Image (cartoon, helix red, strand yellow):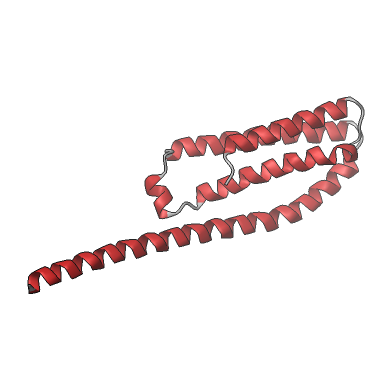
Length: 155
């Protein structure tokens, strides 16, 4: 899983590349690679949010971050990404590339829904497997202790 800071760094560098290319007069289609990187970083932040919303029992108990710190980090990243996206949208509209933007957003919604659903399922499955492992280990230890006590009582 990618850290939020790494995803924000990737988004910021892609955003800077897009702005620089657009200022040089390039069309949005010419900088599709930068848009791709930017949206990948945005997707990584969404995945981090899904993991934060569906932590395993072990992650809840042994996570080094407080709930508040994790919430602040994810929320801050989300707001930063939203501000970047708003500026990119306004720039595309201002430069007369509305059709490109609308087509991209329509396609993005379809793909994003599918990916968010997959990320949510993956996070839930991971949390479930971690919980089952913790329960198995706990039950094994408890069984071992009961057997040792039983043997000690019988002897």
